[in-house]
Length: 195
Image 1 (tube, rainbow, N blue to C red):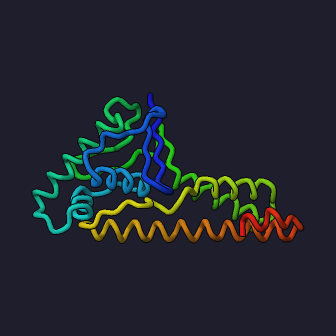
Image 2 (tube, rainbow, N blue to C red; image 1 turned 90 degrees about the vertical axis):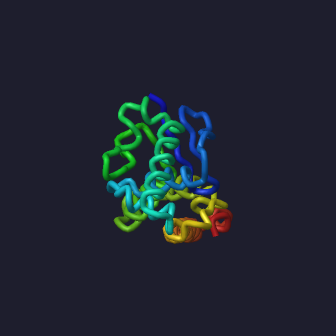
Image 3 (cartoon, helix red, strand yellow; image 1 turned 180 degrees about the horizontal axis):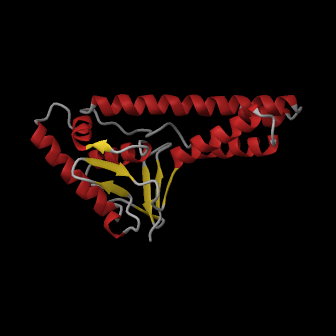
């Protein structure tokens, strides 16, 4: 089974078995991959996805475009050969399979931020909390989907802006927390690095 790695913090990058996936036919296919991976907590109705990526298109044409984009995405990421598959697909819905062999930088970033903040709030294992926050900051290569735009899909752009701002706020809070922690310890050089 090939490991799928999705890096969406900074420029869009997907690798399969450590090799870059470059066979996406369009930015709409990339957008579909990003959206499904980040919003993997629930299945998405095909009609909603078609409207998200092809707004203003007749329903039938938008659904056809979604079918074609989904077929290209499945081929590009080797979904048909993955066990379990990366995508859970029904006639009505599509969902990213969180039980598949994948890694998503956004999910890892948010998990490490949450773990670090919880440990600090509970005053438990401060060193582990610092390591979690540092690891999260290391993952933050840039803003979410940096340089990636779908000018004809305002709903997708709105969604990516909301995600971008949420992740940026989390990164800034982690940097402030690290700077403050090192300042309290008198480690001013490290505090300055994070400030």
